[in-house]
Length: 336
Image 1: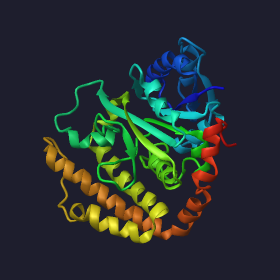
Image 2 (image 1 turned 45 degrees about the horizontal axis):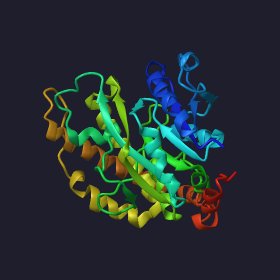
Image 3 (image 1 turned 45 degrees about the vertical axis):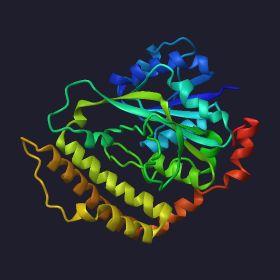
Image 4 (image 1 turned 180 degrees about the horizontal axis):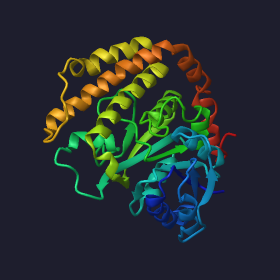
């Protein structure tokens, strides 16, 4: 049986997709893994790039998902995967040597349901002078230090892994309902929290989520993201999707409490008009202010359709891990 399926979801990224695919093809044979590319309604030269991809083993298997959206594409990947572990890599991320073996290692313990590694951001061009470390999280940077550990929601210093470099035991991901299409990027919408939402449900069901610092990828930053407008929009939509995630999983009271506890100071901050020359610390504060007001809008939107969010949450809850996924993890047979 194939041990793992490395899944790369892509939409109109033919110009950069080849780097990720070729690096994964080099590492997959040694880990008994297949490479699966989910073409999410691309209209560029994605097919031609994939046809030319070469590695040491089999070429990538390609499936097309016509419904636009990263969550829809990832769910298609879960459905099509032939391995026991689904490893998700962004199409603009390039794994370093030893990445795949390191990311798969924690799954030797049947208690582990999810693992994620470090993400270093990589610039093809010199970033603008106003860019600073505090903004790197918006570009998917993820580094919790040099020590591996289990991650728990709400524990200080713990954050769930990012989707650019994350793996799930497929039995657990399916038992938890897969990725919610209510969060996550769709076209030009920059919603996030798609992998956070799934990690939370897996954690809640008893599956362990682990940080693997030895599994490192370089996340290439596209030039169009290095603009003030992109960052302001990314923070606004990040706040909006955070409200949806909290409402869906934690309820109205928790969502309102987070508004005061996490966003209180940012909500009363004065606006900053980002014009050259941009002052970095003031721009960071403006990004946080936008995130806070995005959360307010998301909270209002989510409360208005709260019943729909909770219905979707309950339908995705699945069974406790002790009753479903552990058995599949022990026998090596994913749930159908």
